[in-house]
Length: 90
Image 1: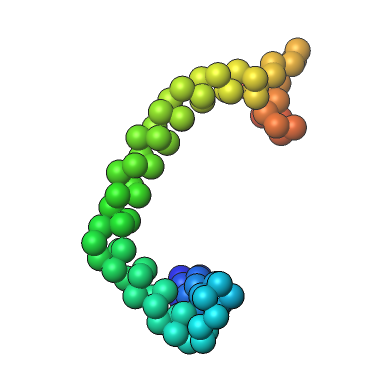
Image 2 (image 1 turned 90 degrees about the horizontal axis):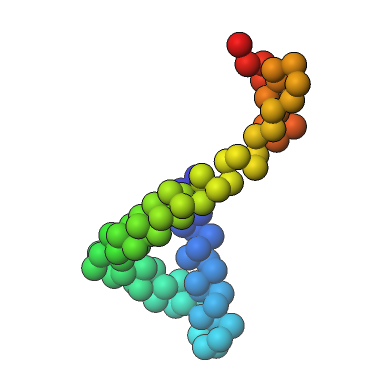
């Protein structure tokens, strides 16, 4: 599956280079792969993780307490409904 995703991305890079720069799609694929490999080798994925982790942490820690009570509805008869799914509370 990962190879298919990578193949689709590389094919898209070749198409974009062909569309905007007018070069052959094979050369666009080769240049796109070179850019992706260089970016990953230099530390691109590491920097994505370092920047996304604090953003996700702040988003989840601040918005989850606000959204949680709105998702739960207590109904008479001790049934708790959550997004149209019912679970019996003992």
